[in-house]
Length: 163
Ligand code: ACO
Image (tube, rainbow, N blue to C red; front, side, top):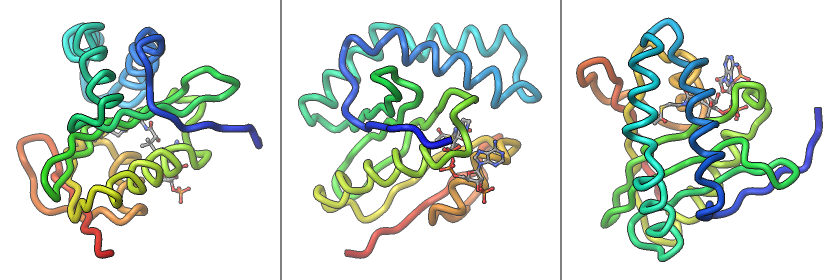
């Protein structure tokens, strides 16, 4: 199905939507990996309003964080967040509402973040993805990331940029 999509920096008014997307996506993505209680605790702790607002403000001030949302009819349906260092970045999280997956939106979010990273001279981006998250791993491989090593339950993947 074709639908108009917009990608832009998230703002304070998107906080509740980010929490909802994260909760829905975590329940879908990790249903065979983590139990409900673990997921609920993770969302309340890592996606607290305070932490999200802090990251949104840093992204708006261009202060070491890129935090973008994908919007359909003005409603956020996915987000990407990266930590930006000197020449290096870490893709911290990329999550879509399950019903919006597999339609090219994840790729659009990543491409938009890569445009910003290019302007900042980033040459390498790493990420951690759970070793049982086959959809995530497949997506990142298709988008140029390679597995570098295993860290506990995660694969560490990396993409190099040559401009
Ligand atoms: N089933 C199987 N493969 C899928 C699916 C699906 N439902 N959705 C996406 N993919 C993978 C496949 O590799 C697919 O390629 P194919 O069409 O040749 O099979 C490719 O992604 C398609 O790319 P997009 O349509 O751009 O992917 P999408 O818009 O779905 O975004 C994302 C990818 C962000 C991983 C999304 O599927 C999602 O939110 N998944 C759940 C959350 C998740 O796993 N996030 C990554 C966690 S790790 C981290 O954040 C650092």
